Length: 171
Image: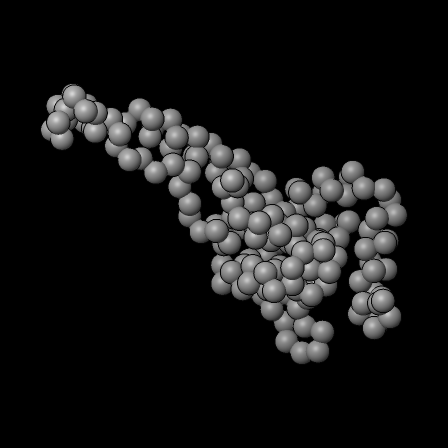
């Protein structure tokens, strides 16, 4: 079972698609992003509602309107996207098992409750490290990695694909 929703993955990839090979932002509609990535349009529209509420994207009005990044791709961290879509999640929910041993007959001794639960401490530290890593990676970082791996023709193909859809020539 995944910890983060598929919306997080869709959102990150969508924001990456809004950055061109030079690192410049481009406006795109949710429909374009959904079709480009072959993900469900209705679900992606809900993801973009959350991204908009979080101030990561802004919508544009008019025919062919879409979304654009609300700030530079270098200023949008993966953690920003995670929190916008899935909210603040805790990796671990401590159930205080340490206090429920059968030996204690519902009255755990003081030593059991002294200080934080060791298991919870480890889990909280793990979450903190993970969030630090997510905060270090930006949409621009991920886009650059993608474009470095892709053949030189990839950005040209993406631009041509977008151009076809915008001119109404898409099949």
